[in-house]
Amino acid sequence: MGLCCSKGEPQQARGDGWTSSTSSAGVVQTQYQQENPTDLAEKTYFSVNEVAALYTLFSKVSNTLVQDGLIHKEEFQLALFGNSSSGNLFMDRVFELFDQKQNGVIEFGEFVKTLSVFHPSASRAEKAEF
Image (cartoon, rainbow, N blue to C red; front, side, top):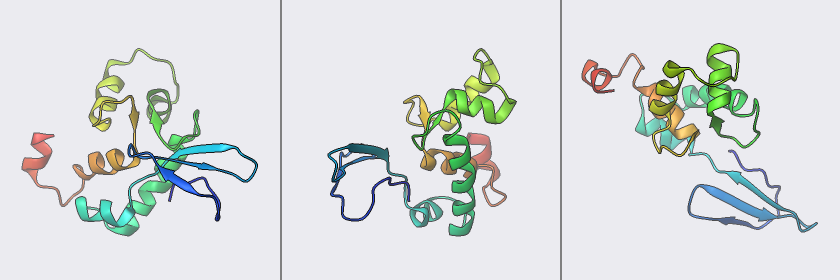
């Protein structure tokens, strides 16, 4: 899931979640490799099917302005408020909660793990800690 490359193209993991490959035409393609849905289901309160449904939503938001499989702050604001202009303190704080790595983008794993806190099976203590 999340890879851009076709069969037969050698892929190289860079160790930072990004995978690069070179096509037969010599074009280097790089894309962020998302976490495995089964692994995310094991780390959260979501089932594998729920993680898959969240991926569909995430894909729509993450490819609104920048098609790289990550949610940028402008895309997040566009999804929440219908505009991408900056300057919303509430949106900035919510974005920071989702951006657990504090790298300026929301990865799919961060998205799922943050939403898991709001799952009905999450304890009140987990919700309060959040």
